Length: 233
Image 1 (cartoon, rainbow, N blue to C red):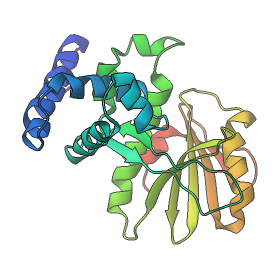
Image 2 (image 1 turned 60 degrees about the horizontal axis):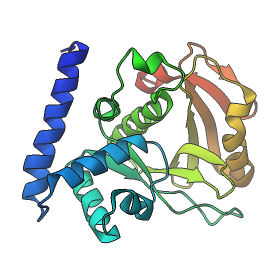
Image 3 (image 1 turned 90 degrees about the horizontal axis):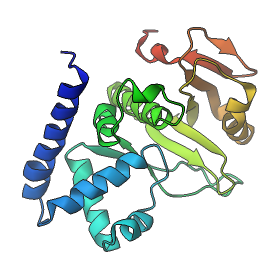
Image 4 (image 1 turned 90 degrees about the vertical axis):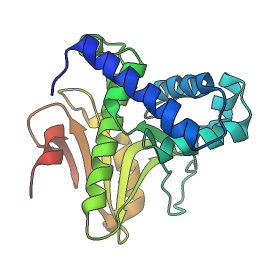
């Protein structure tokens, strides 16, 4: 069922409130629900970004072990998912911090106060919401695979990034998400960096974008419409 914007916001607000007040509070000794709600707001703002729990703790003036406990609870009730950092001890200074994504990107958008109108603005959170949406769709499809597929992200201390890295039997598919109808060669910077270190272990590098054509950008480099996530074959 498609809800009009006001009803959708109310639904998401009620959904989050129910999870926090019922599932989370019942599974823990948390006494201050407003702390959990404040944490959710911070996580929504950092969706698609590397999550440093100590920085979140400082921002909310909470103890680091409290934030760590809250994050685990939010994963247990399937509100968020932490996407681990990927590394094979390659010759690069890869970071070890996970990224955070909301299992339901609609909930994240609601927490950020975004809707279909505000997302059209240049300063909207569309990019990070799109990345989280793709991450969760890929995670669901990984669960259906016959062989275990590892889902991770890649980022070096030099700020070279790849949004999603899928690895199965040492073969890798690398994915960037671009919330735009156009793709440029520069959008493949992180993918090329990773490809140069993986060699033959890289199957393909893909930029998922909002356009309608599959476009080649070099050896094993493709721009692919985001809708391909649901296409068979």
